[in-house]
Length: 276
Length: 257
Image: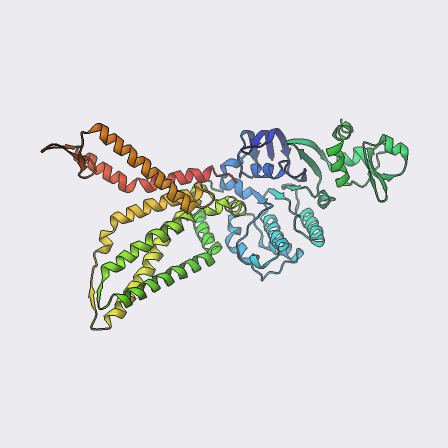
């Protein structure tokens, strides 16, 4: 569905991607993780046709994003980190913006707004930042575009809203949709994504499904020195040492995304060895 | 979905543009009407008892150019804002439809509204003046025929400012003026050097393709064929706006955010 091949991209003074290759399939929620400035947003903007690759190719459902053809723009909805919505009520958005998206469902939009507890009578400029963002997320989901890209969607959302967000996104996924969520707040994606892609220094550092990770790695809190010695990664916490090790028993442990992320960034070779 | 030009999508875009900018357009219209009313009130008060309609046409042109060009320079200035630009570029429509929507508002609707507001205020002011039998009003109804050349010039300039609104991400109005000045100076210098080398001095132009030179008491006239004169005139009148708008289209297509 989304195919990125040998992507080279850079801004005037900074090279961001140097041969990045990635394939994203429908029916999944991808978590695109990485430190600030590693190129997550740049990758999403390349995929959505707002930036053009210097070299390499990107296709989305067979379309070249950079051409920004209507059929492509209809099938991809981007929720950027910095976003704009006109100063109107959410219902007016349906009247004037939704007709560009043939798959748009007003009923779904209103349902998502209700789930996010957005007051329907307010114009968007009279909403808080979080409410505006939730309105945009609701609109993006209601467009039913096969590809939904979200750049730091949980930034500015309170704890309850983050929980609502996870619930709404999980409910919106079907086998035809590909949802990509880029974030550096890895905790927000726990129990939501089914594949993790970590970008660092313009390269794919790690790309595995949650299922594989749970099968091959174990996460536990331990005081045992033997566990620490065998650990692929460990860190001390308030309750004891958090240990990431090989899963020898086949029993699935609760995946701690934040610890996994740190383990990959700080101890990549050892973690990768578990997947070879 | 149709990827070629679609009138139904263009209509949707035109409606959306109005709805997205309704407040801005309303305020701009009110400001324009307010300023014109103020100017006409002053003109009415300070010019009596003899009023020349020609004066109002000067007012027309004096406001048309700055207001029209400022408005044109805002056509795509949102592309300088990442959030607004993303919102606009990701709307499922072709670049041509988006460009035409900009042209419809900045050139066609603006001009119609400006002329409409001006004529209403002008006619109403002249009507009020005519109520006093001591006042004398000098008519000039040929103005609309006389401004044809100015209209071509205005449309070409508007096209340049629309291109500037895509090309320059910030301060598009000022930067477009500077760019036009630089181009104008370079062109004038080129022409000056070109003719100085081509003809003996002194020389003067008569029309677009005829040059008269003097050598003492004698003068010579160098003239190209009349059809060349016509072709140059037509080109100068009509070519600028399409060329600049085509450049805007390609600039929109290659715009990155």
